[in-house]
Image 1: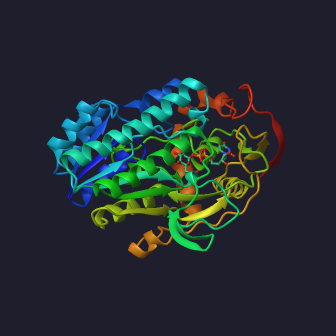
Image 2 (image 1 turned 135 degrees about the vertical axis):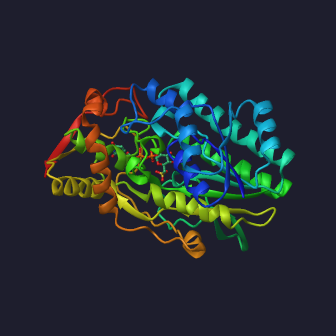
Length: 398
Ligand code: USQ
């Protein structure tokens, strides 16, 4: 299959390119290297060293028979995007090329507007490019579990049956996103659903939970194939941040009491699930939604697991609860469905503790690399008032 990865240089895109090539797919990619620029803008780096694109391409061609076919430009530049899609002519497109950070989208008006412009118009351009040049191609679009928010009822996969004033219908489940980033994903979902019903495109909207994990030289014996691992307050997601914090002997930063519950999936499982979706496309005109996570955890529970795994490796750590810079429910019901991927054959790779322990071991060699960033781990971007550094509420040591 010819698979185009939009966002091939990112945390998921780079290992996914390798995973797909190993399965014999012809991989194409587009990117504008914005993730590297955003992390630099917020004053951070990837915890794990990553190769520049020239080195990545060279390494890829050494490991795989198929060369990468890449175009470097902006999804907002429709002339670039349309031409590349037309010439590569994919059977499927995996769209990962969005600004992924909730805090970054809440910095100020300019960052909110940039996030929505970049994500919503970039995705809309991709819909037009597919409609115009390869209407048969399957779009696998990365959405987020955060689109649903945390309602007090179970969360279905995209749609639910509803009865209202004596009539019944199957409707999109209400979205209650928690940041301008998460709302940009809701807008994308609506546009994708409309493109399927109106133009007959086929799409899988993947509501992915929080991804965690390393993909390093250990995985493939070549550091150039490593993917990035962010730990800053914008682009670092919770488990990746906790792992880097224990390596840095920095207290784990739990926001509020830590009762927030989310769905989580290891990086390797995310690649496997995206591949499952890709290799079992929906029929023309179908818009299907997969909730993609392995299990749900509370943040305080995760902090405890990371501390215990660090302790087993001889690292003592401390959990500090900070005032929550976000506006989100602190303790809530959370029971999302995640059946569709299991129906397609998803088998979780295993134990979260093992993955976390391996992550700590992968990051430990880079302790000195991380050290200059130790003072940038407490959030300053706030949802509701003037930005200022969150203050500690309480702490616990292990
Ligand atoms: N949190 C802490 N301490 C930290 C960082 C985060 O307690 O140091 C809490 C947050 O308040 C939140 C939870 O951990 O309740 C998750 O935060 P996160 O930064 O790991 O993840 P989030 O902002 O939800 O976004 C991430 C990705 C995003 C993806 C989303 C999936 O950045 O691209 O869409 O996970 S989901 O969360 O299911 O919506």
